[in-house]
Image 1: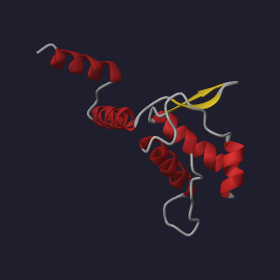
Image 2 (image 1 turned 90 degrees about the vertical axis):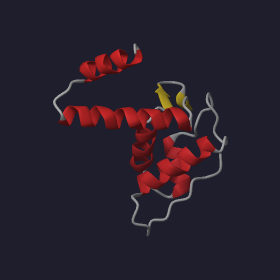
Image 3 (image 1 turned 180 degrees about the vertical axis):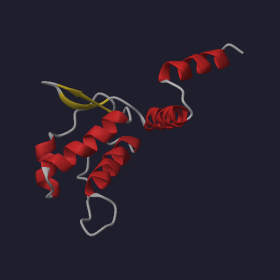
Image 4 (image 1 turned 90 degrees about the horizontal axis):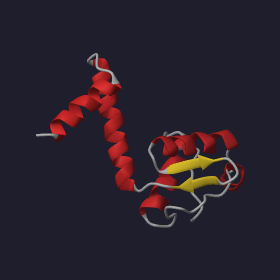
Length: 117
């Protein structure tokens, strides 16, 4: 995987820039499912940013379904850009449903009912 590039003068937060670069590497096949990413401290040193900035970016990608954190095994790529896009839409749907007074289990029931048609 090429080293992610960050621009500290850009308006986009650095952690989002790091996440975007890793997302791009996964989409381009530079980081494939099953591969381990370098440790956060190493990425932070190469980028000249704080380790917590990198960790925040990694957490975003974990929440998107692209990465998995396993103690002793590091951070691994587990998802694809397509899966990440679906997870993002599901999260949007759940957030919208919450604003309408629905719980997650109720949304699941609605989806299952739609699938039965």
